[in-house]
Every structure is written in structure tokens, then in C-alpha cells.
Image (cartoon, rainbow, N blue to C red; front, side):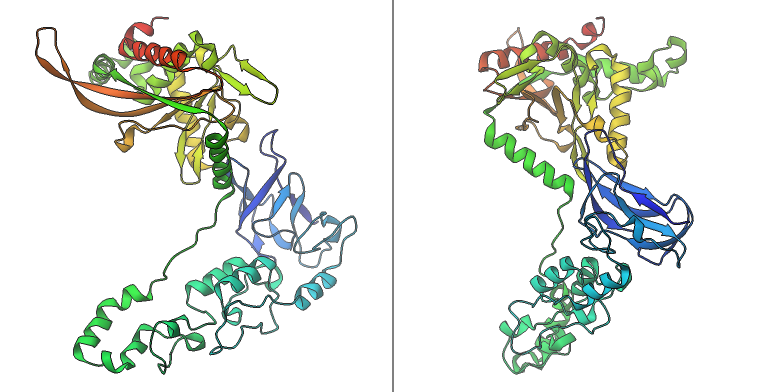
Length: 473
């Protein structure tokens, strides 16, 4: 019996997801647990797996389509089974354009095959305009990409549903050099015939020019052949996460009155305390003392997270949301601590809820767990929302100070920097070198003034410089 596969709902706040990549095509045999497609929310990326064994008998959407949650995406069943009853509203492939009533598969194929191909732009008169061979329909996204890059669609594969040429096929053709124009003709002397696809001039063809027929010219050709065969540039498609980051950061910098305070922290006691934990663990004291901190030594970032969660309680304007449209500053009684995490997909900010009620060991363990979920793309979008103050760490990069960008509607963000050696005078008139870590506090001047920001920075500095004492609360 045919079974539809729906777009999952990842979190209560998610209304739709974008299909990032198809791992199967119509007609493919799949087993339960096989990856079907990758989909993106505005914060994370997930893979949907096959619920059972069977054949993919219908695919309703393409890569890049924004699909509402709980809508049918594809159907798994037997090759001869009917699937038209599962066509969702807004389908762009099988049952394309279906609204209320479904088109038949035969009608859909006919529409796809008779759709006119987009004409390539800037095609020189030396090469014929690329055209289809008549056997493969082309998706609108693929047509647009082919027109923009002058790709010869005759040389493109067809890996999409129903033997359709989709964008990845055109990209592959472009990477293989199957272009419909001879761009090299603009750069080299006329009369050089190309041996490449559609008459494209290749590096070897340059040797036909008289000035390059010498031994020196041949040596030059050999030395640069590899470099000249490389594409001039490579376009990378923006992920949905990157688009969201772009919009959020632009809004933050363009709408908030941001001001950054850089404050040095004497890390002597903090680093000595952490090194003492390492020594006790190395001596096998973890089981004897029964300290959770010896089982999992907290990082510098964990220590900053703990310090911020305690210190900000005394400064309610910094554990708040500035809601301009409502005309209010919303102060929170609990600290929901955002932790900036760098991933291959982009920056993510999972939230440690009620951090002010958790121990250093608990904060350390939860921060590591959330970071791992971000890295693997398995984190729930619900865990990426609701922060009241955020900590971002640039310590591993060697940066001494930077300007963190506030995650609105929060009123501030705390930046952690690399440990560096600083020089200061001693009471006896000498000088000494000490380890320092700068705090980079960015605040929204619409919500808080400079003096309170300086006071918060100073209080956080005192907490960190006397960290072992603050663990007693």
C-alpha cells in the first residue's frame, strides 16, 4: 500500500521547511531508514528517512522549495500503485500546480515536456543556442541557472524525478566545462579553433598561436595548463541558515544602537584553579573526592557562562528584551543563557534554560551537549530560541578584543577573547607579566546607558578574578 512521507515539524515554532537536497529520485528502491531528503528550518538542517521498504513512486517538490510542515513530500509504494490522491496543494513536480484537485501524471509530464526553454544570454554568434534533445524536461531553476551560465543543456544529465534535468545536473555540466559559448575567443587572437565542447578553446589550443609555438611557449603552456583549466570562480548557494543569519545580523547592526566595552580580566587565579583541577584528576582523586568537576574539567568558556549567569542577576537591564514596538523592556527573572556555536552550517545559538539555577558542572555538561547537537544538525529548533543574554567565544582564534553583534531582542552580548600576556606595575615599583582575558561587552544603548554597562563589565571582571569564591553561592 502506498505511503506518503510528510514534511516533519521540528519544533512548535516551525511552520515550513526548505528542501535542501534530494538523496533519491522517482523510481529508486529504498529500505527503511534510508535517507530520502535533507530539509532546513531557519536554524538547523535535518535528514528525513524512509519509513518502510518500497519504491519512490512520486516526488512532489524540488530542491529549494519551501514546503509547509505536515504536507506530503513524496510517496513510497509499488511501481503500479496509484498515488494521485496524495498530491499536495502547491506541488511543483508530480502534480505541479495542484490546488484542490490533482493533475494526472500524464498531464504533468505533458506540461513539463512542452514548457519552453529559457534562452541563454550573451551567446556569441560563433556557437548555436543550446537546446534540448527532446527527451528530458527541465526544471525552472535548472533553466535559469543554464541561461545565466550559458550551459549546454544537451550535455546535462537528468537525475531529477521522471528523468528531469534539475539544477544539480546543470551545475555538474558547468563544472565539466560543457558551456555553449567560447568565452576564450574574447581573450585570444581570432582564428584559433577550439577542440573543446561547442568549440570552446582549451589550453592546448593556445599552442596553435605563432607566438607560443616556440620551446619557451610550450614550456609555458605546460606550466600553466593546470591553473588555466581551473574555473575562474565557484558560486556557493546560500543555505537557509545563512540567509537567516544575514537578515538577523543586518537588522541588529542597522536598528540597534550598539556600543562595545572591552575590559581586561586578570586570569591568574582562574587559570590556577583550573590547573589544580587537572592535577587532582591526574592523581586519580576524582573518585575519592566525588567532585563532578573532576570528571569533566570545565573549559574557560564554561567558566564564563557560569560567571555571566550569576553576575547578570544583579543587573536586570542586561537580562532582558528591548521590545520597541510595544514600548517596553521585558526583564526576566530567570537567566536563559545563549551559547554561540560555530558550525559548518553557520552560527547557531542554543539556549541553556534557567542557567542561574544550575551548577558549573551542569552548565558545562549542557553546553557541550547542545554544541554537539548543533554540529550534527540534530538540535531541535525549540532549543535555539528564548535566550535572554548570549555569550560568544573567540578564544581559539587568538583575537584579543572584538565587537560581538547583539542577538535581538536581547539587550547585550558578552564576548570572550583569547588569553594574552600583559604587563603591569607592582607595589614595589617593579613590573610583572600576568595572563589576561578581555571581556567584550556589546550593549544596546537604547535600553541601557554607558555607566550601567561599565558597572556590569566591572562586576563580571570581579566575579572572574575571584571565581573560586563565587562557586560557594
